[in-house]
Length: 193
Ligand SMILES: [Ca+2]
Ligand SMILES: [Ca+2]
Image (cartoon, rainbow, N blue to C red; front, side, top):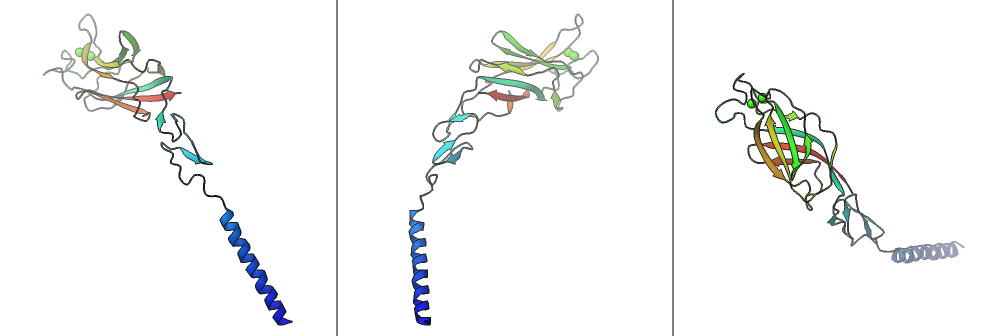
């Protein structure tokens, strides 16, 4: 009796182990095993699901947005002196900063001004609400001024920089640094697709 039971048990366990083996070989291969998704894409059933802003089978294509929005402008660097004198030599004080953003002859943004800013300061220029740039191809220009009081004096240009609001390969930076060596701006950007 014991022997029969043993044989029965042994055959049963053999059946189970065979059954398991069979099941294992039937398990389908991972459909994502050979799929590479770029730019933060994730593989779902062998295909890439792309994050906003990217397309293509491997999410390798940067989509061109319909607009880029400028929501803040910061000045992080400017010349401390106007040649050899201060920007406001009558009062011997620092410049009163504001900036103008143009695209061609169109003025897109004129910021508010902040008074008496010393070189090396980081200044968020006031009065910049969300501005939508629709033409992503034409270069923009940003110019920094020292505001003065006419008729005693007219505003001094402190320099300007040409820049592109959009680059097809730079992965949508939310902070765009615009710099010409003596002037540095940081623009806060967002993208709509
Ligand atoms: Ca001045
Ligand atoms: Ca001034």
